Every structure is written in C-alpha cells, then in structure tokens.
Amino acid sequence: MGDQRIGVSGATGQLGGRVAARLAAHGVRQKLLVRDVARAPRLAGAEAAVAPFHDGEACRAALAGLDTVLMVSASETPDRVEQHRTFVDAAVAAGVRHLVYISFYGAAPDATFTLARDHWATEQHIRASGLASTFLRDNLYADFLPMLAGEDRVIRGPAGDGRVAAVAQDDIADAAVAVLRDPDVHAGRTYSLTGPEALTFTEIAAVIGASYHPETIEEAYASRASYGAPKWQVDAWVSTYTAVAAGELAAVTTDVADLTGHPATSVSQLLG
Image (cartoon, rainbow, N blue to C red):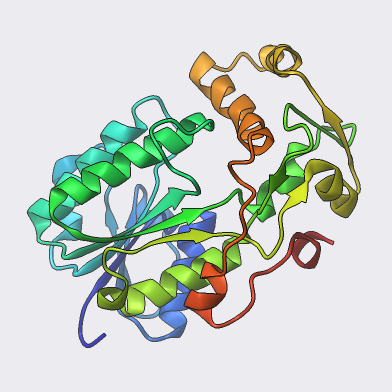
C-alpha cells in the first residue's frame, strides 16, 4: 500500500473505532474523521480532524491529502442521504482517490427495509462521482441482536419465520481493513458481508436467552407508538422485520472469509 494515507470516518463509534484500532495495530498512518476531536481514540500514527458530514467545507479540509477513505454511514436522520452526498462531494473536491462505503445488505431502490433505499441512493451518488469505490454491504449487526429484546426478554416484530444472516462487527472491521490496505484490488467491487448461517428470530432468541413473538404489521406499529418517534423512524424499525419476513436478509455469502482469511463468526459464537 506504499505511503498512501487513509481516512476513517465514524472513528468514535463501534465500527469505525474497530477499524481505526486495527489499522493502528498494522502501523498504518490514518486520519480519524470525527465530529468531536476530544472524543477521538488516541492511536499510534493517527491524527484527528473535525468532519461532520453535513459540513462540506470542514469535510473537504479534513479529507485533503488522503488517498483512501472509509465512509461509515451517518446516524439515521431524515436528511442522511443529503449528508452523504455532501461528504462524497467533499471527497471529490479534496482529491480523494478511493472511497470505501459501509452500505447495507441488499441495498436497492425498492428494498423492503426503508434505510436500505438510502444506502442505494448513496451508492449511486458515489458511482456518479467518478471516485474509485468499494461497497461493503453489511447484514444486520449480530452485536445488536440482544438489544431487540424488551425488558421482558421478548423480541417482538413482524418477521414471521424469516431468516437473517447477521454479521459480527469484528468481521466487518476485519473486512474493511483488508480493503483499505489494498484498495486497488477491490475497486469497483461490492461485497455482501454476512455471518455463516441464517437464523430465524426464534433461533436467535434462544441464543440470547429470550423468546420471540411474531407480530402483525399493525401490531408492530401499535407496540412502538408509545416511543413517540417520527414516522420515518418507526417505518425503519418495522421494515427491519418485514425485510426479514420477505427473505431479503437470508442469503449467506463467503465474502467475510474471502476478504479476511478467517471464517465468519456465528451468532452463537458471538453471543452464546
């Protein structure tokens, strides 16, 4: 990879932080692209710069001099796609050569999971930008599965008996590092990152010591009404389950193993 410099967005978060730590362990120079420099991890060979996705000028300044950048998608907001476009345009203006984007499994304009449509729109903007790019389409985070259970240890949602090939964040980080360290090999590629098996929510619940109650779509909206969340967010929550019911998150790939050289981590290995 020579003397190229790598940028890592979301370095204060779960996934970006994992990637940054791994790059530091490999002795890779990197710039951590964060909203708050004070919260950036202190890593050998790393510097931090303020680069909130909505601020094109700040992003362009922070991205200057970087060759390859990991773009971890922004927090879920109604204007997330616009924020992504701003960051991509700043990368072009700053002379970034290759963008590695953390997308979502099955990203498509008609995906059942509403936020997967946002990822598709972001991918399209990156494709149109002229940047070299690699898309890592992650399935649901296996690490997040225990949080789906309520205080009564019941997972509720309209997933029916659909299956989900949830993937561990450590595996995603390993895959991202493999791409970042040798980006030219992966230019123009899209990888779908999954665990080694697809499980039903009944099976997942058994692993985490919970149970699963399949809701109807109407029940799902009703049971989430008390949160007072905006409609777009409730739509996203509910469509996570309906995407599983539709079979859109079920197919298992070997991309984790192909990129990392080690088997993907199962839900039981991670959470059992």
